[in-house]
Image 1 (cartoon, rainbow, N blue to C red):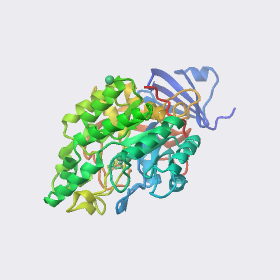
Image 2: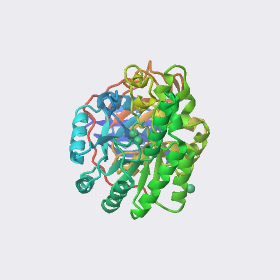
Image 3: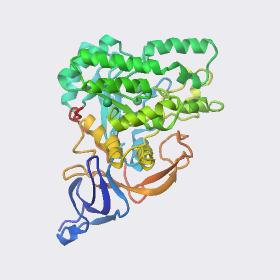
Image 4: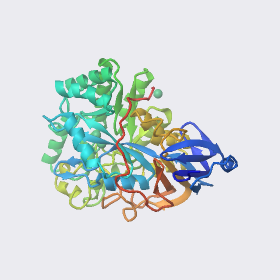
Length: 470
Ligand code: URP
Ligand code: ZN
Ligand code: ZN
Ligand code: ZN
C-alpha cells in the first residue's frame, strides 16, 4: 500500500462555511479525498503515512486573502514584503492562498503588467497565489485585453476613483471597463474614494501647516468614500448591472450605500479589512510620528464606524474580509512623509493576522464560527472563482487545511511576527486562538508551530469567473 502523501487529520472539529462536524480528514497527494467518522478509517483499512492529532482543535480550510500587495511600488518606495516573505507570513497565519495585484503602468499593456508580476512571484511563494489586474489606463486595447485575461483565468480588475494622475480612472473610463466586464464575466473591483476632492483638501491642509499623519484621516472624509461608493454603484447599474466589488470599505455611510443596492437585488459586493474592524483614527493621532504606521487608504475611521462594519459582516452586506496587506517599514519608508502626510506610503501590514483576528471576533461573539470561515475562506474563494478547489474542505478540494487551536493565547507583536516589516499595527493585542499546523496542497508548511514549507511550493492559480450569487 502506498502511504506516502497520505495524511489523516484525526479527531478535530471540521468547520466549513456550511457545516461543523467531528470528522477525520483524509488527504492523498494534493487533495482531500474524504471526510470520515472519527476513527473509522483504520477499521476500513485506509492507512496513512502521517496522522495528525487534532483532538480539541478546529480543522478549517486554508484562508484565502483576496487582497494583498507584495513588492508593490508606491511613490518613492516598494512594499517591504516580497512574495516569499509575505507568503511565509501568510502561511504562519493560516492563509494558503493570496490574490495579489498586477499593476498596469499608463501606456503599457495589461499583459505586460501580468507577466511582470508573474515573474516577481515565480519561484518565491510558499503558498498558492493568483492575480487581479489594476487597470490604470482604460483604452480600446486594454478593454480587448480584459477579454483575453478573463479567458486565461485572470478574472478581476481593480479601478481607482482615487489617486489622480497615478491610478485614477474618470467615470467614463470606469463605465467602459464595467460594460466590458458585464460582457466577459470579469469582476470590477473599485477603490471608492473621490480622489479629486481629496487632493484639494490635501493641498489646503498642507498649505495651512497641517502636515501630521492624522490629517491623512481628516482629508479622506467618510463622505468622499460614500459618494464614490454611490457613484460606482450607479455606474455598474448603467453598465447593465455589472457585478461590482468595492474594496477596503471603512465608512458606515459607504456600507449603507452597499446595503441599499443589495436590498434592490443588485450584484454589488464589499470587502472590509481587520484594520477597520479593530483599529480607529485615534491611532493616526499617536505621539510623534507614530501615526504614520496607520496611514492607509481608505483611512482608519472614528470608532463609531466599526459597529456598522460588524453588522454588515453578519447581514451579508459585506461579504469578504481581506487584509489589503501593504507593508512599509516605519524606519526609512513611513518616514518619507515626515513634514508632509501626503508622502507617507499608504498601507498596513496584516496578512499574518487575519484568521486570528476574525477568530477573536468569534470568541467575542461578533460572528459565528461558520461565518468566520465564510468571510475568510469560502466567500473570497467564491467571489474570485476559486471555490471548490479553495475555501472549503471537501472531497476533491485542494488539501489546504489548517489545524487551529481555539484555546491557545498569543500576543501579536513585531517581535514575533514573520512579516518583513518593523512594526505591528496590533502590537500588544492579546488574542485567543492560534494556527498550529498548515497544509498547502497536501504539504506541511507549518507543522506544530514550525515552518516546514519552502519558497517555490506555491503555484499560480488561474481562476474561474465570480461564483458568488448575491
Ligand atoms: O493604503 C492602501 N490601501 N494601500 C494599498 C493600495 C490600495 O489602494 O489598496
Ligand atoms: Zn485601494
Ligand atoms: Zn440588507
Ligand atoms: Zn489594496
